[in-house]
Image 1: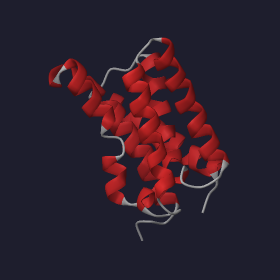
Image 2: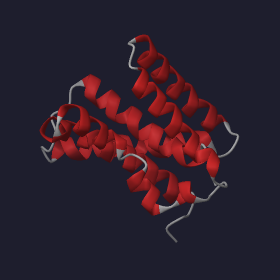
Image 3: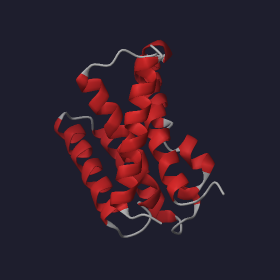
Image 4: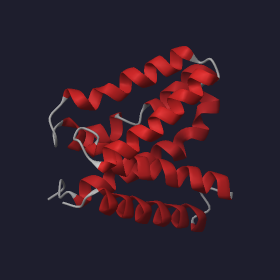
Length: 151
């Protein structure tokens, strides 16, 4: 089982291959900011399954969540900051290699990436978040694949 560096490398590989693939197929026109954002979501997905254990990956993941939460608080989006804090606690409620290492979690965990924009701005506008959902799922898949969950 790779450590956080191996999972980040796997997530980066999936991100680059995904970006190249969607570009070559003409599915998405990428600017550097969007490509960086999609790569970030893929890397977060690659780290997520191990946030249920004390690790460097967990520390990195929660550092990013803390920065996002602080940004929400500074912008006075207290309800969203509270939801983020609540959802961030869920991985601690299971055992390591429990629900966070399942194929269904790979699809369910990133659903807020689609559902929150759909709820806030409407379904039509939320379609722009589908690539970010897919990027997180791809990173998550890379983690499960590297951990041998699909044997």
